[in-house]
Image (tube, rainbow, N blue to C red):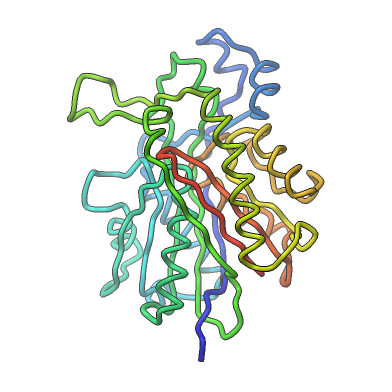
Length: 317
């Protein structure tokens, strides 16, 4: 029997504190109108001082497990995508494992910045197809507010905090049709966070926004084509696009490439900002729970982030 990964349940968590554009404009030279026009963002969530990537991951994971109708002990692999781990080591996945009281399973982090969830999903898919795992918890969790220079108006308006999760199980028919991940390290200086252990740069996110935008739009267009070709599908076969929530202009360009109206695109950036590795699972969870994405729908997820690292996943829900 061939084994395939299928989506059993999703979950999400957003911190309570809401930070508006108007509040940001009180401390840096910007405005609500400028931020909305350039990014599509109006508000974002900011984690409380006691919250961590692992604590938010736990909230999202328990939500996903409940949706899947499973207890934590059913999980035999945990993969967390995060660029803002609790500690350099052990992994946030191990800390999440302890929070969920799961024993005797592998747990590790994936560092692919905003593409972290897609990379983690791809790894989970391979484990299930190979017969090495039966029930995988995949989480994207980010505390972006802790790595932002709040005096830098080019970056402080973009990011928010949150966590999203998915539980994958085994099926005889393919649910996760394919995943595609790629990287190109030549662009490493266009989007990065310095390590304070090396050099004197403060550990805040640095980004050349215009250059990142140009590469992202072209690259996402190519991976959309690659994903459709690998599955012998056309643009008309896609029911929903669930993109990484980086910028409304990038999202709109990808939708145009697919010939999809924005009504068929899951957009959460307006009220969440860019939550990096958490953005796709948060958006997927929202659209499943409000009934937009239904069983049998074909869903394309795609992301682009620092590395550069990018990827896609095609799901028949």
